[in-house]
Image (cartoon, rainbow, N blue to C red; front, side):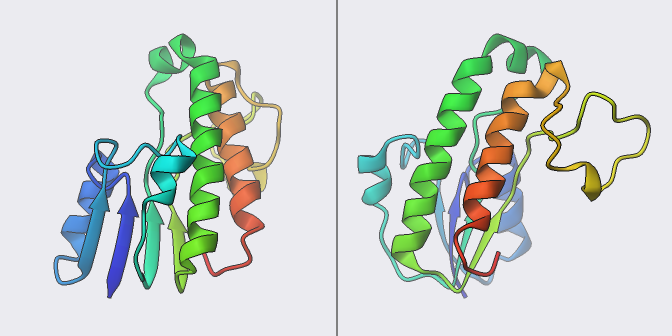
Length: 146
């Protein structure tokens, strides 16, 4: 199994790689490719069965408040570039791991998938949620198994 993992040196990505040591991994982190830059993303090549995206510019609540517009810009830029990458590489499967919250302001106690897609985001995660919502919509338009 040949797998490309974007964000593979981060906490989530490195744990995914550790779960399948027998797979043939190409691990890319932010030092290997700037996924916000189309030219850098276009340099990524290969023939992969699976492309996994665990890359993202996110943090906790304080980080979200301090970097609101940067979160939106960087993550939407990454999404567009990753979308182009997946279209170009044509893997059999694309897996997107998202760490950003998408919960609405009025979510109380338990949440379920039916609440995803509401654009009435809680103020503390608004820009993270907007970028994740855009990512979801773009990836859904890929037309490949994910």
